[in-house]
Length: 297
Image (cartoon, rainbow, N blue to C red; front, top):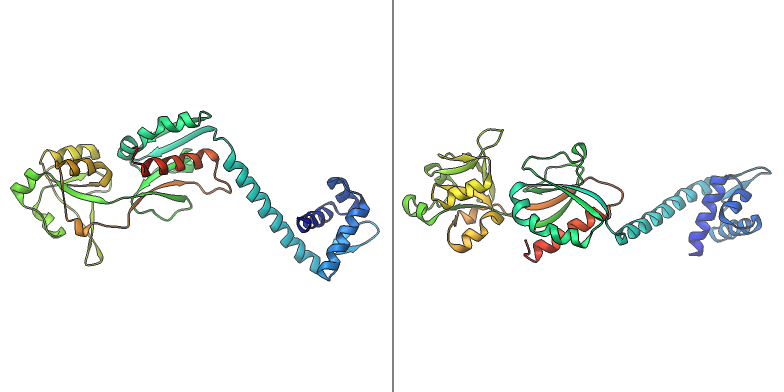
């Protein structure tokens, strides 16, 4: 700790321009400051300051050492600030944006317990499947599904995710079960309407990605409608696992092409890069992680 105090003394002398200015800021005598500088120079074996009658200036060695000293003190301040914020009670307005189905099915059940635990937080939740621009639109945090695009946002992985191709037992009995992705060309595929044209379904075939543009008699801009259409026997749908896992378990839907499912997708919480993560963002992410891991959503 004495060595850290020495670094503080040196920086204060340089910033104040004199021993007396540093003494006044630190609540010490000028002689005590001079003694600390002399002890530091003796320990390092080099002169740090060149003294004149009116001011002090750094020697070349002193300039190099002072630069490192500032970095060390700044890192210490940052560590202390981070610890302080970690222990602070989250408060203020937290604006989050979530994919519609994920928000409704998995996040909504977790919100009451979060707000009861952190009464100082006011939560604003927006459900949207578009790629919201967090900073421009004033959001603190978003949940993103699938592979992340390169960006300056900080990402925290919440859970793995697979997209399952599913159909009802009745549909498969009538039309047969596809064995490879190319077989989908002979099937009725239920697809999500997007503004970029026909949707693409991706698969892993012989270790490489294969992209198909399926056709079918039903399209919708809502994943829950696609799930209902699949349960009703209208065709094959490709949906996130959390949407259809209960239906698969109950036998209402049957997964197909499981060996060709992609394995590199996940669900992430993302937020703008800042020097310190605010307590409200940190606490909400930790709450999501705990709730999803415990299967409470």
